[in-house]
Length: 338
Image (cartoon, rainbow, N blue to C red; front, side, top):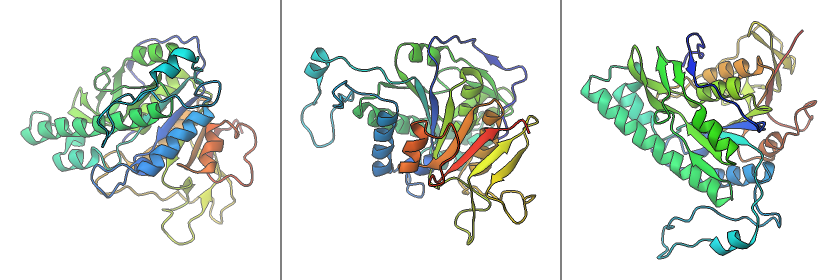
């Protein structure tokens, strides 16, 4: 996915009375089993949801979790809820934050097999794939919203297509943020996702979660952004390759170029090697780094860290705003005037 082009961009003007603490990107590979079609990594999703509750201080003042998923659970004959608990106990508002998630094993298969990312909605296969892709990604969105709600997070699913987002040659052309802003002002947590959208020139394409989060950061100015992935951070080569080195800190200059601050590598001019899975229609780690650098250029710190770890919890809790602790595993991407 190309870097978002803000030229001629149409976005509804938003005004927030609440400062957004954090925008969180849940990587598709971290919350799904990417090689198993439409399969959620239940353990990771549960841990991530719990850590979001802990870090954003959601829940009752007593510390008890008041779940908000009152839908019928598998294997149960009745709907269990905590309605009486809500009647007698005040619910603490969470710090304002936004969640954006990737598709993982949801949507990518349908999109790649039909060529949705290439456009041509007039073709029967592409049109069918567009519908199938959206069914798949919205199915995942609902399950993530439910997982967050079970942790007492007042989450609301928001699909970019349904909210009027569109592109022009794969760059965001229109993105109405008014619904997102209203949700935040109302004490709700918007949960957006990578989606199939209409494109002014290509007819349709895939809008990745990484591009969405970059756009949200530019317009809503969170304190920091956290990418939760299936690896510990950004490496100088794919982490599966022997001797791959974790890059702990990357500095982004005014012109958008970036350089490695820590650790010191033998060849500091060497480009970071990345690769994407064959069915990944959104650009993989390369898009993630590009969008993270664009966010850091705005003066917003970005942390890329492995999901469902203590390192992730520390990043979500805001512990990394100063110097990076020696015992923290992850990658910090920051703006530098030097």
